[in-house]
Length: 180
Image (cartoon, rainbow, N blue to C red; front, side, top):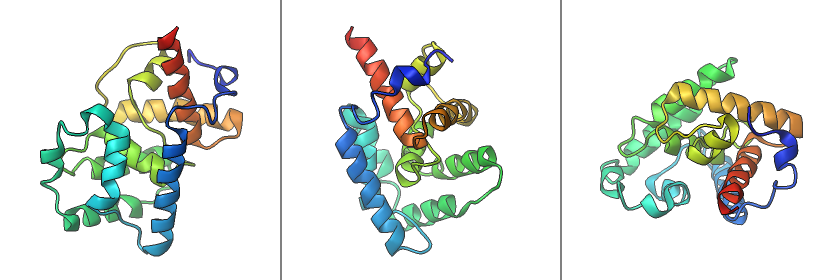
C-alpha cells in the first residue's frame, strides 16, 4: 500500500466536500429510521449521483431516468436486505444488485453504499486507487472494488475511523498531491 495511516490522520474532516458528505449521510440515516425495510427512491438517489458524479452528472442522466421509482425501490431494498457474515461476499452481492440499475456502475454503487452504510463501505474512484495502490486506473469492476475496500478497511481499523471517513481522507490526500 502506498498511503499510510499517518499520511491521512490530519485529513479526517478536511475534504472539500466534507460537510456535503456529512449531510448526505445524515439524510440517509434519517430515511433508514423511517423505512423498514430500507430503500431509496430516485429523488433520494439524485443527490448521491450528483455528489459522486459532479461534472459528469448530466452525462448519463437520461439513462438513469429509465429507472422508475418502483425499480429504484425494489433494487435498493434488495441490495440493502443482503446480509452475509462474509463482508466481501456481502459487498460483492450488494454492488452487483445496485449495478442492475440503468446508469449505475460500480463507482456509483459504491457511493450509494458508502453514504448509506459509512462504517462498512467506501467509494472507489481513480484518486483513492492511485493513493492506495500507486497506479492509475479509470474503470472499476466488482473485484477491483473489493480489493480497494479491503485496503481502506485496513486503514480505517488502524485509525479507528469509519470506512467512508477513511476513504474521504484518502481522496483528499490524493487531491492535495495533485495541487503540489
